[in-house]
Length: 186
Image (cartoon, rainbow, N blue to C red; front, top):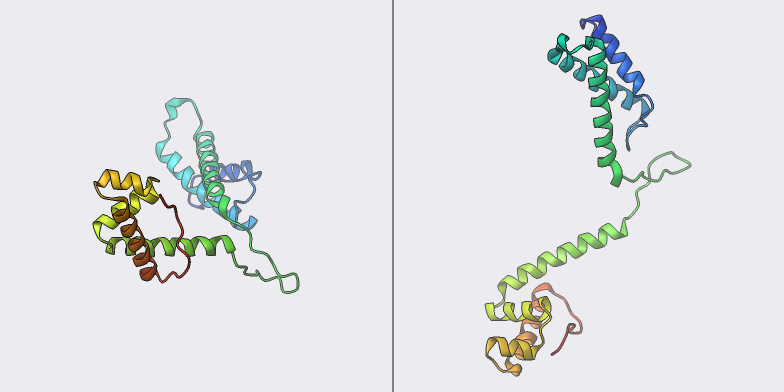
């Protein structure tokens, strides 16, 4: 539990700090016995640091100072591990075998697929001529109508429409998407 070559008051400080933090439930994913070992390791390190930083003229005993430092270090690490583990979800366990069961996270699969599609679209957009990229940004990014885009670019509305259709067809061809044209028309 403690280092046997540490002074007795430091060994006692480790034991007291671990005892004072027994109420802290194991962080997500931690087994109770492993969490106890972690608390001991944190306390040993904090007590040693306290020993190095101890100033007797401050009015506290070495052991008292070391216990406070160790408890603070354990609580800080517990809070960090709990924050880190908030998103951790326990895996379901098969009642017969006791083994963790894997399950498909539909939301995660959809997010991964959506991210991959965004990357493909970004890459395809970079291959379009500059004017078509500008028209797409004005139409879909800023929500401007074809008429408003034509006014801004000093072109006729039918030219903007042809460029918009051509850009969408090129994107579909590059990302392999078949289907009906979506989006707004102006």
